[in-house]
Length: 258
Image (cartoon, rainbow, N blue to C red; front, top):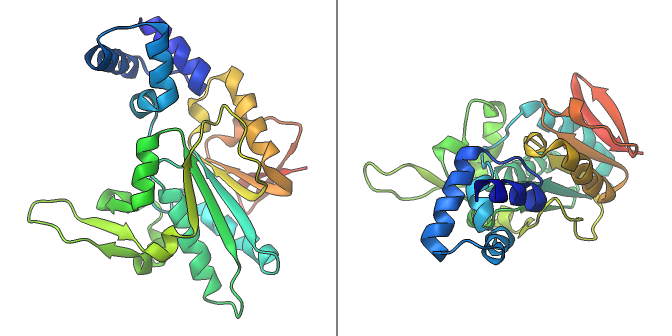
């Protein structure tokens, strides 16, 4: 059964799942469905149940600050046209909210604000539900990214809590309206929308080598000509695609669609 589930993880999600997570999924199937057969396996992978047990959901505000500095250098190019951004494999939404917070802070210095829209998706429906609620604990505010913490403060409302409960914050509704969260599997083509910038960070490493080209191709197809693709700092060396040109700017590496 574990071999079957591992193959399904590769087929449906494009990833090499951790053996411990596969065992957790197997236990979940036995407990929930009582039987194990191909139709049940297909169901748990198609419904998102498997994604909740097999995918990594590590995220926090303003992770890898150099990429937000890069975003700041790119924004002047869109002051007249506006821009559309995608946060791919967005987990619980910290990245998408960080992008919105950054643009809002940038717009304060302009006579006319840059219009923008953010699409953010993840394969895990539970993470998308959390992102739509926009509720986070202090763990989402870490030292990595603290230089941009001031941009988050106007948009995070501290929620009431009882003694001993973790401190929680909720993102402002005005910010949530700027972001469209939805469930999507990167092994499939993106909806027919063209983006100026796509953030796809710290998820590429989990895909198996045969599936990485497919995932990148799906992202490139959703980029405008000259559009920007930003991956995690440790991931850029693994990307080779004929439609992308690698660019290094102020020690930050990113890709531009040819």
